[in-house]
Length: 365
Image (cartoon, rainbow, N blue to C red; front, top):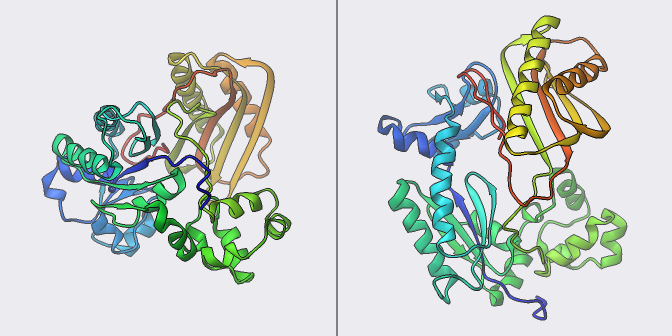
């Protein structure tokens, strides 16, 4: 650990099975039962209760697979307005302690409590208070991780889930990082983890033995990140105003689409939706991306960037049509999505774009 770096007190709060827990709280008959939030017939699981997770049901899993793993799984339609309502209450609790709150999604956030509004020395006690208040005001449980940087706090929040917390103290950090499996390190995905395994790198202590030059040679620019993070060097600050880099709307269909008229109708609907949301927040963008997921789950994306900003639903639709015509093959379509990037805003706020969807469709947050 490099103690020349400023030691901050960072808390990562993560709600436990948030969407599913909200449904179980609001409908007590679902308590103790395996439930999945999402479409039963098509789409994917948005969230799974802990009872469902015991059977291997996970978020982002196709609903059909989830049902095979847990035949008595109960599907519940998502209610995003309700989840946002509760998320707002939770964030209000965070702001009682600090203004340095960085939301990652509706159900998790980083808090920098190095200096806090309560004047409390112990970040561990702050996390306990926050979790207790969340339970008292919403009836839901949260887990928390506490450490000197965001990476360690996030790893720690998973250790005693659900309804628990874990503090990684500076004097325990070196040992913790040395014993941490490399796939748990921030920025190490499946492909990188498998490459590390092939090199005999399984834990932090194996990673730590490699020189900076060696890691850069093996992993490019990411090598420097791996060299630093295994030594507890992760300097990313809690950013209370995260700038939204893109806005996306997607729709998974109850039945696969092949008819051109149906495709046009769906694209027009997506174009109207993204325009309304962007207009509401005074956001414009220059790059439009069309996403197509086919019946066989293969993906196709294509983008167009303009010199000026898109500004009307007709422009979104017409450009979406041009991108549609560039698709590589004619196959039944399972999902369509439009997203906008290269946004005009430097405003420090998050934009949450959601679709009002029927039961059989699933929205990506």
